[in-house]
Length: 204
Image (cartoon, rainbow, N blue to C red; front, side, top):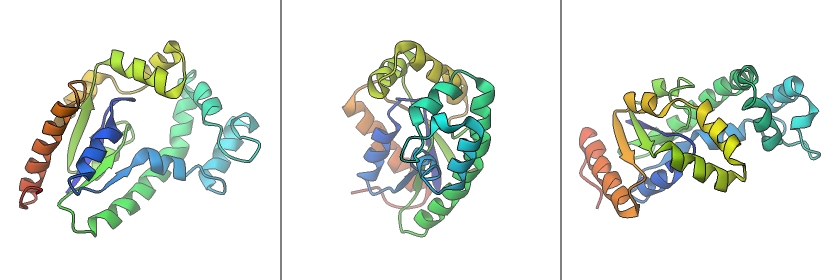
């Protein structure tokens, strides 16, 4: 069974994934895969450079993420062009990673993806788990974590699926604004439910 985990930027998806990992559940992160496909020598990087120009490539031939982010979050057409370059390649590599995880003995696996719904990756999973926090928390965390101003943080949040639309598509929801203890309880409860669905005993 594959559980798709998503949430807006800075909602704490990686924190939740690590909590599941502590219970023996493997996971693949679409953000990690998205970084893999734009490494030097990858076809996606060459296509990005051809479209967006040398300004998004560093002196050592790597992707300048900050420069690219400033372009795509200021222009929806450019963002969609970037998605057209990257999304099919991310999906192909995710499918390969998930196949390897499913060959292991875990009761279920996680696909962690901020664009689970927007990119069509929800078609790869059996259930969708949304990690939810208020937008004000997302904006504050994004500004602090990514060293951007509040306006850019708001633009990043606004470019994603609206919070209510994301929640409407959830099979399960974790409230990640309620503190560490509450988060641990929610993860443990979902783990019990997912293991039961797979007809396996709960984690020790």
